[in-house]
Image 1 (cartoon, protein in one colour):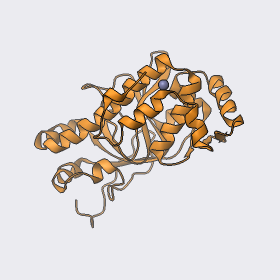
Image 2 (image 1 turned 90 degrees about the vertical axis):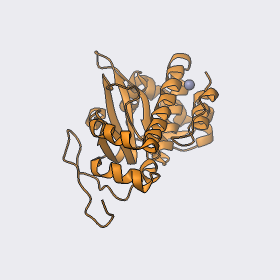
Image 3 (image 1 turned 120 degrees about the vertical axis):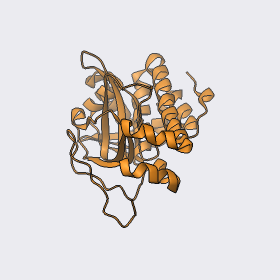
Length: 257
Ligand SMILES: [Zn+2]
């Protein structure tokens, strides 16, 4: 597709609203592709968009695609047969959301945070494209590795660290992926991301607000004092930040418990 052509728009899918244009790509993974790789991929890309929503279940997206967010964040949530959820990995403008293991997501949800726009490609259409480009395979493998690093660190964090540490870590990491000090999210939504009760999130949020680290009201949490909030996190925050400089940079040996 030439830049002067009208971009293709995706049909509405589930809760997805208006479609997003394919050009220009604010997603740094797509923006970093060679012209040759982009020429292979572009005909199969569709734009999708999701407005900010305080309701988690309005943010579900189909899981048979790879997503390249241009704005906002897309997260993968594991879900139990009882409907309990926990966030296992996410990506914003500098990454991509793709199947972490070489099979279907299974019982997972894809949910958005903030006003989200993304380009997506169906996994079925991607396979023959990857067969033609080693560099594109390597790029997507790096994106998958980044998600795997998050999955590993979240396993460590969920098993060894307190919710008092996990909540500030989640806020900081989501703010980082959104490239904003403000995250449009309710406490109930965050409780479902962390796999805890909403009342637990409310209690910890009150403490963080009392010390001036955050301000949370009307479905938006603002990082008021980053240093204070970082001091409340566990070591997972700094470990993951050092390990994921960009989708292709992985130093998993630095991950600590
Ligand atoms: Zn932790």
